[in-house]
Length: 510
Image (cartoon, rainbow, N blue to C red):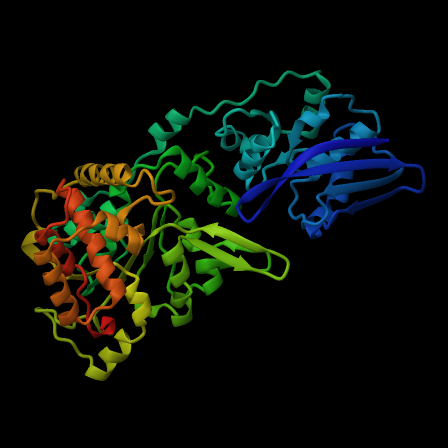
């Protein structure tokens, strides 16, 4: 007897459909799995056999062959347990359902027949929807995440016998519904606010400009000036995620198993802050079975690198490509995977090893050679890809002691949203262009016309500061963002002069 049932898997962060074929033949009892199964898939025979028996069903004493198609793609994980078990019961005649091929099934089985959750359920359901599958059987713990996808009937089960009775028509299980509007309403909140930041008006203005245009930013200042505090609040002033962005972000977190249990959908901008001891594979992604790294976990959000010079140089250098392209490409002998990595980079550093170079209250104890060596840990090409370089001085005690709060995140986000709406209207005809920071040189020429006086000031500043051609274009893009915040159709002289202030950095940039 032969039975077929659909399942799903994930490659990278994208789902694909797997057809599980189970054949029962005469011969000595045996159980073999073909179709490039990895270790966890090969071990499924023992879990399936125990789960079927402990759920009260007879396990057929025949030669069982399980084929996972397409056979050219490696299969990993324990998510095939439930479809294999159902396929065996269908092939043996225990499960009678002529509509079995219209279901997609995923789930790991415990030895007692309980169905455990799997990673990456969202991209699997999206793949099923794109392939015309209308019904999806998932574990209880994955139900609300799966139900985020519309047009697919999500049925959740907690045990193997529940799945069998549902497919046989004995048990009625209502499809799971997830109210996406309610999810956005309940979970769209942050625990921090820019109102808590005292002083640092110049730096807060720079953060507002960076958020409005999607610009990368480097904060350079003495310890305790508030660099980390401001960086952790940047996500609170970014525009709210739309449904498409939320799905993109959730796919990454679902695949890596980092999606919070209480959140079926990522509706807030992610904020990732890896330690400076991170490896290049941890930051960019990779491994024997490639997984997304921190740059992909920060997709549509903020990646914060504190103490930037402390990161290993080769780790920082591998960030150049995702900073430019917004994607990470990981190549292996058998395949090449692409992970999304469209994030805002926020980095913080001290001006010297002791941290007090240029401070008015404490004396720097570093020698010029130590300062030069410390700043030299950051390469010019990497610094050139960071749009804004901001000096953050120490905060005076009287500013910290002020009772009155500063401007709130909501007020700043309202201005950022206004600027982003202007950009959305401007870039309607440009596919894949979402903010000013992503403009190419040809798009800069199209959308950022400068008059002769403004151009002359910019050229003189570039020559005086010794900046590169890339920095020239980035200053114009920052000026375009400032003009959007100012609700100006053209980039004026005052917009460019303010933008030039955001490109100052010690000699490492020159």
